[in-house]
Length: 299
Image (cartoon, rainbow, N blue to C red; front, top):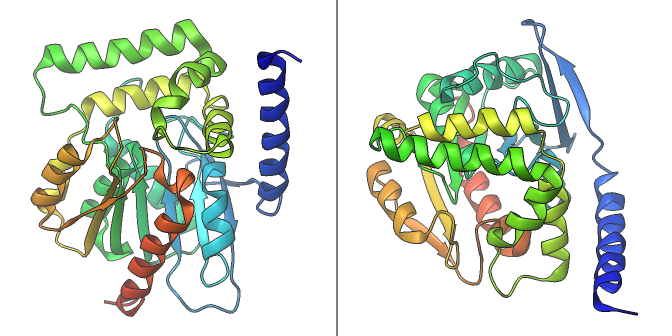
C-alpha cells in the first residue's frame, strides 16, 4: 500500500474514533429572542454547584474541538462551547465587517437564554477577542477570564497592515475552501511533536468551517484590538500560550499579559492548539483556574 492511501485510511480511523467520543456531547441548537440560532455542545454535571465554564473557539475551529475538555472537566462542572456566529448551525452576525461587540452581543443573548448568570469565560485565539469584549461590557457575568493563545487583532495596526492581513485570509478561504484550508493550514496549529491523532482532529475541525462565517471572522480579526479591552478589564484574568506556538507566539502573548497585569503561563511542547495537542496539561490549567474562581460566583 502506498503512503498516501495509508495516511488517508489512518485519518479516517482517527476521525471515526474522535467522532464516537464526540457523540457523548451532541450538537444542540437554541433560538434566541433576536430570531437567530446558536449551536453548541455541553457536558453538564448535574450534581455540581461549581461555576459553569464557557469555551469560545478560534477562527479555524468549532465547538467540537473541545471534546477532550468536555470529557475531563464535565465530571465536575457544567461545560459549554458554542459555535460562534457563522460557524456550525449558528446564524452569522449581520455586519459584513463585524467588530468584537457584534459577537459579544450574541454571546450575552445565548448565555441569558441558557440561564447562565455568571461563568468562567475561556477564549482561544480569536475566541479571546470575543471573550475580552464580552468581559469588558458584561463584567457582572464573568467571574474570571482565561485566554489561551490569544489573538490580539490588528485594530491598532496601520491601515495597510490591517487590509493586507485581512485580504490574505479572504483570498485563501475563497481559493481553497474549508477542506483545502484544513489541508494547508492545520499543520501550523500544532508543534512539530504533535501526535497523528491531534493533527487529524485539528484538520477535521478546520475542514468544517463555513466560508461566510470564516470571512466575517477574518474581518473581526482585522478590526479588533484585544489589548484595548484588556487594559480596561478589572476582573480576574490569566493567559497561557504554548512554547511552540507559531501563530500567537509567547512574545506577543507576553505583551497582552503585561497589558492585563497578569503573568503569562508558557506550556512546554505545545503549539497554537495546545488544548488539543496536550490536553492533560491544558485541562489542568483550566481546572485549577476554575476552582480558584468558584468562590466568585456572586461577587
